[in-house]
View 1 (cartoon, rainbow, N blue to C red):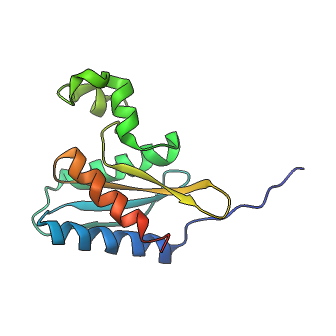
View 2 (view 1 turned 90 degrees about the vertical axis):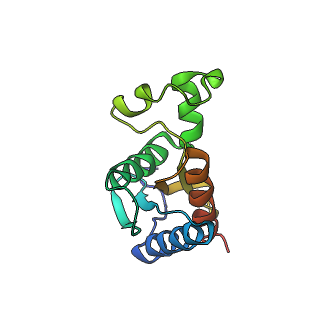
Length: 143
């Protein structure tokens, strides 16, 4: 077969994920940026909350892009770059590799066929908090 049926994340879906991420961050008292990328790692939607560091926009995009292109949560990539025992202390390798290999990027999987259609990246607080916001945002598409 030369062609395969697939699905794609729509602008409506991307906006839904960003809005859910912003709502979750606000509920937790966080100021973050939430980015959503398509399966190719290209930005579909982005919002930086008031008070979030300007650089968080670039990092959130990188986390979303990395999660989409590597087809896994960026937390797993962080462990492979620094080893599980680093505790996240050695962040230089995570930011200088051309991809953001730091916790806070979560793939968006189409439940109809199990394929990755995009990813959400969050930046602005501690990496595990970024990841929790991203996971909460992505979960709204399954509801």
